[in-house]
Image (tube, rainbow, N blue to C red; front, side, top):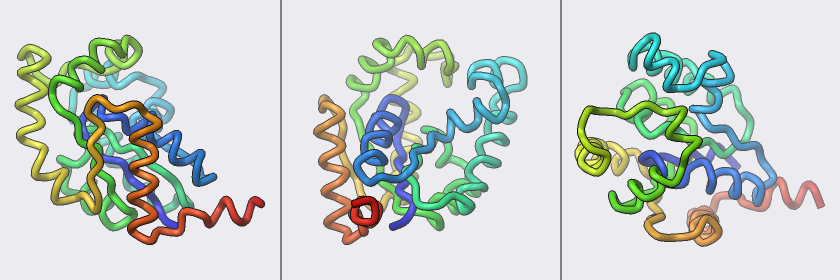
Amino acid sequence: MMKIILIGYRCAGKTSVGREIAQRLGIPFYDTDELIQHRTGKTIREIVDEEGWDAFRREERAVIKRLPSLADAVIAAGGGAIMDIENRKALKHNGFCIWLTVDVRTIVERMKNDRESNGQRPPLSDGGLERETAQILAVRESVYQALADCTVDTSGKEIAVVTDEVYSALVRRNLDCNTRKSRAS
């Protein structure tokens, strides 16, 4: 077994699917954004509003740098974590990266429906939500693709369907998906 790292844009389903995969595998789940909030006692929005994006990215780098100390786990990386070269190296070196892709329309729908996330996360630019999402995805797409060991599209799919697809991808890659389950039996 190893660390399974979910990468992708906001609202791609990394946290929801990550929790389900971790439960299925019987290993812990960590969300880098949640780890940052726990470490700082502030939401991402508060960090960015008070100290700027650079301060948030420093916290993110510190959290990702600690990944090697974790045992087997499923980890949801923040959407922009991959834009930092140190983070990319740490993520690639420490786990199997699964890129959860999603189309712009689905992202925007999910963002509008996710009241909790909107209150905790600041906008990434001054443009409209759809335009901002399309622009940032265009910049990040090649980086996600280069980092990905596997890709699963989440557009318009329920969490259970995506979870099954991710699990199947892990099995196809011959990752030991039964390690914890067989020990627990």
